[in-house]
Amino acid sequence: MEEPSDYDKFISNKKIIYEFKKWWEEYQKTKKQYIVIFTGQTGIGKTLLVNLFSKLNDVKINDFSYFENKSLSNYKEDLKKVYSFGNDLPV
Image (cartoon, rainbow, N blue to C red):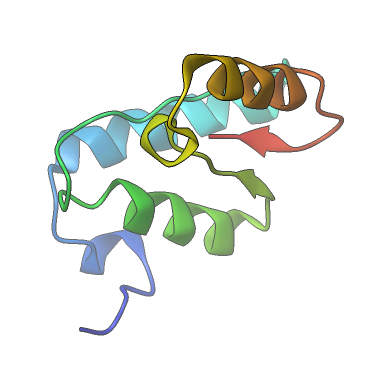
């Protein structure tokens, strides 16, 4: 399956895409640093949406999964690293 090249080709809940784009526009105005966390069932397109967003907006994404870390302490360490970012947009 070919990855979508823009939001119109992304088959998903359009409200989520709208809210994400609205959040990004607000971020662009304030430059306030945020942590964005996507949750949901496996296979619904979270990673695909984040990768598309990254490409379209030329931002670096810090992507990690609680399930990949296998422990709460590792997950907390990853969060600490992400929270101390410079100009990255963590997800």
